[in-house]
Amino acid sequence: MLGWVLGDRIYLSSRALLGCAWILLAGASGCSSDPKGPLCPTISGDSEGLQVTGCAGGTITLSAATYDATGAKASYSFVVSCNDRSAHGVWSRAAGVECVDGAYPCDGGTCTPTSSIDCRVLTNCLELGECGYAEGKCVVTDEGCASSEILCGLSGACHLVGGACAATSDTDCRTPFGACTDCAFKGPCATTGNCVQKEGVCIAAQDADCKKAQQCGFAGKCSLEGEACIAKTDADCTGSEVCRTAGQCAAVAGACAVR
Image (cartoon, rainbow, N blue to C red; front, side, top):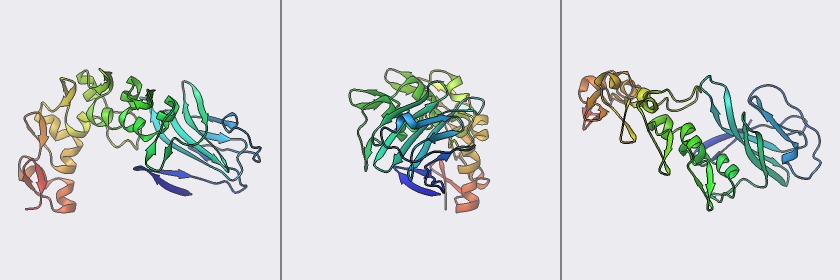
């Protein structure tokens, strides 16, 4: 296995023993020698992975997988490199493979998208919902908001409202985010105790919601104050992970700290 970091994500690739580039999420694959020409016509995929039928000595990178409510894979992004050729795009259950021949739209830390496919490959699509393209830049879309790991998964901002992602109901705050086991956040109610929508954002409204949230067990933020869950007493902190692992067992200014 080979790996490298692009932005703040780690990507993995693999080389087959016979000089044929491939990577799979599951299942088997194969390919032939490199015939040159455009890469996109040689690329096929499904929910199990991506295959290139003519790419000797190259690599394929899969990233940004999304899942439906049942846990089935709904889409993922890919970047293919084959000697002096390259292509990138997105596979989705709705549209299949959408591919653009040419280099990944980033040079170092600068990204210059020219289409919505470029935007859907970039990490800001999965994290921040910027999956559409308009006037030379990536912009948020309603679909992007709904699948964004940070805005929807952490904050409940799952719908496009006035050009930005926002929470529109208590359902946005309370519904668990995705069905993927590797999602960092499981929704604002489960993660931070913010289970009620108010003016487009999710807030905490009940002490019981604070105590059930992940950040109670991890960071001791188990008590309601105003519209947020905080570490209000030393007792909130003493049962937390940060107390056990880092000695942060005292409540100081709403957080657990070392006293």
